[in-house]
Amino acid sequence: MEQKFQYKLSKKQKSEIAQNLIDILQKDAKINKQTVTFISNWIRTGPDEKRKAFFDVWEIVLKNFLPRTRPILFRACTRISKNGKIASFTGRLECARRFSKGKGFLIICDTNEILKFEEELFKPGEYQHTFYCISSVLEKAKKSGGCGFSERFLSDYVGEDEYIMRVDLDNMQSFKWIQNE
Image (cartoon, rainbow, N blue to C red; front, side, top):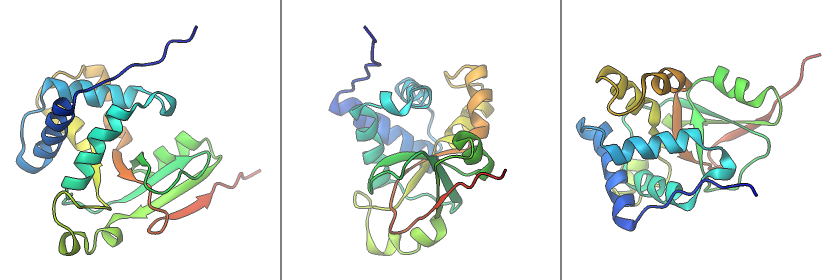
């Protein structure tokens, strides 16, 4: 029988991890052990293994964190996800192309456009279109001696330039990859 990855967190743990994730990028806080485990598990699990605990933490983060940067983000997928789904994006088109193997769809989000009025129209706890840069956390950890992440883990994943964001097709563009023959 196939074993499924089990990852459960209490309401308190979800809140603590979410707050640490926010504080890492807003207040230059230290990365705590729970957050290291959370990020490691998120990155290492495939889409079929992502459990509710992951999405609950990201939901808290995305509603309360307003990023300072405004990159263009990309998502490769075999089919277009439903609106509102929390998903991984990348800041590098090359990473999206590599993940897709030239098949499926490419979703593109100009975060400068999507966040133009976020701060004016919403307050923390109500944000709807934000994103979170996991790569910034990994880069900080690498510069700080690892912070509990292994050297190999950091070297394997820093370059993927991963972000977490809700799919919002009303404010994003989607394209189908075309195979050149």
